Length: 527
Image 1 (cartoon, rainbow, N blue to C red):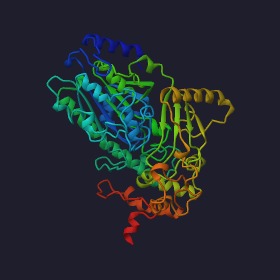
Image 2 (cartoon, rainbow, N blue to C red; image 1 turned 135 degrees about the vertical axis):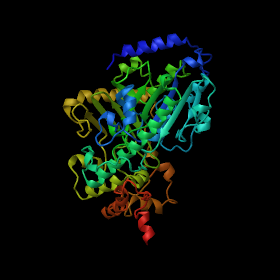
Image 3 (cartoon, rainbow, N blue to C red; image 1 turned 90 degrees about the horizontal axis):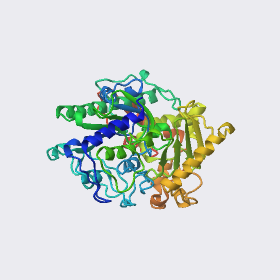
Image 4 (cartoon, rainbow, N blue to C red; image 1 turned 30 degrees about the vertical axis):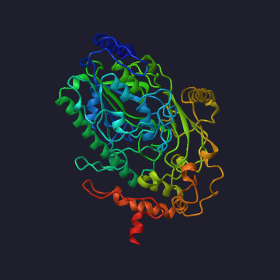
């Protein structure tokens, strides 16, 4: 890994050679730098994916185009998102601020509000500075206003910019979201994949995992085609490329949770002539650091200092902790905060009374392994490590020694040997919650205290919710936290619905089944 001062020296030389910049006013950033001297910026995002790429050492798949990008730039080993779900993490990345600070922490916010504190979206700052801004895919997914593509960006493709005008382009490849396609070109044998120990090693879960890796191979080819376009148009040498995911894996213990599986992301940066190729960086970096980096390389000063910092800064080099937060996910209520150092992770569960796997219509509708895991749990066939995530409640504090427990399975929160570490992390986390994000925490209304019956009166939570839509205000109080969410027979019926889909052939045109109620829709159709 190259020493950080070398990064700074390269950047300093670049900025000095391009000319000094000025800011005309607090809310209208401008630059005196000639447009042709400023680099183009291409920010590539994939969805719902951890560092499951061959350049990161993942077994079974091949991602040659992303691997090449990494070989031509720097690959970050410790990169994290600020939230483990799309709309909240994307809200942070569109602004450079933690989502809680800007009131964007509730996934699928309906009553969206304008950004507070004088904050402006990054594309607006770049447009004011003379960049042509474009979103080359349809999804913005922001929990604030403005939230539409044509309100945030100038166009849909950099080809529409003026001659010589630099561009700031963002694009999302959404295939790795849970509508996975098989790869007929290079199908993956489930025997070649490696499962983490918190998932049971069954053919069903192996095949599902392999299907996800195949989808990443398809996305890799899309990335390759986009990078080839830069080459074909002679733009590669003057374009800085960022490659990340919006948050971690769309697996049971990943997306929506603050373990590394939900927050660790791939991050690769290529900048020909400014970043030496083949670098591997172990700094503690966050997705919102890209926002600060983009503004720095474009010589733009934001009206409000960002929460992120430039990837080339001493602040990032010396950063001790990264932080993340999870709040409401649709109608599923929970709240968690985390702090991570290079060696430790502490998670504060603000609603420990709720099960990890409380009812989520999203996860129960699109995650086949959830059925397998629930069946094995109800049958008593999980290992103690696997059963942890199927508990009916959570410990308030979870503490993990990552140097000895990379899968975050051994909770040391009550171990007296780690009392000092726990106290230090809790204090730093509380300072962040108070001073940085101005954390609202959770209320009794959010918890739905005293709202629902003590136990589920029907065979499944989803069945009860469907039958009681007019009797309860689920928008205000969310859904009940009852667990388990279905009977053993109910989960077995769900798995039977999923099996043809999970084990379909690489060339299959089968449509994904719908699993929403206690009786899967495919079963209803047969009646």
